Image 1 (tube, rainbow, N blue to C red):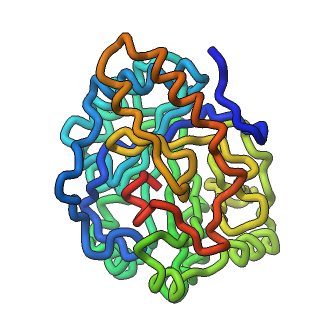
Image 2 (cartoon, helix red, strand yellow):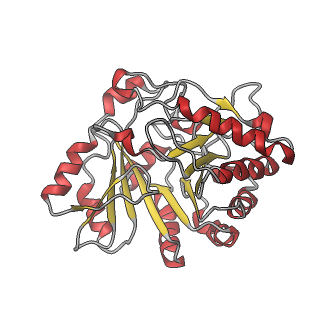
Length: 327
């Protein structure tokens, strides 16, 4: 096994695999008009194709896998996908990001299939604000599912909240009350510009650094970053059961610790969420004997990974919205 490394010395043990581009929410920052499939768009990878894809990445040192969408629970065979992913050689951590609409009903079977960590998108703890952002009044049921996940003993339960100026950026006191007795990892995510959301971005972007400064001034202490961690800068406080992570893509050196690659639902390798191109891997996923060719195809592309994104220049790459690439 030869671990993937780029020309800047970064290694990539972490794969984010989208299994479907569709989503059943209409989040204002992502799909405000709902999901609409492009005419002629190929279908998502099959279970056999996913199996071969994960074998290839395992050959290159992948051991942390996150299943994403769109919304992965929209896919009818999600449980089988999770079981397939958990059986992939070398995978020691199987996580999923979801909007949580099926969490309270399907958590048990997902865990039986091998899921051991979950991120749930909860952009507000205010019911009306949550409905305004997502287009669905489902907050109470989703938070019930989060409580079930905590009680079930998953190795990690995290909540994602996209910061939106004049919408939910005043909710830190409410979140702190929640974190006192909920042992979750809360992720505040700075709004990112994508191909479709420029006007929204200009109206609602707020620097995550402002929130980070507020945390530091009130006794929250930074934690060292784990080797296979995601991009969050994590904080803890002795008075709270939960932790807070800040994902600030516009901060200095954000990309220096990048350790993840992405594959879209149709099998395109994306070296960066905001990259200018995708590399189709599907041609090498049709037969078991193509494994060596797949590994060479992936390894041969890693040298094209840029040192950082170009969001500061307003360049969002080929990502029209976050659902298209799995966020």
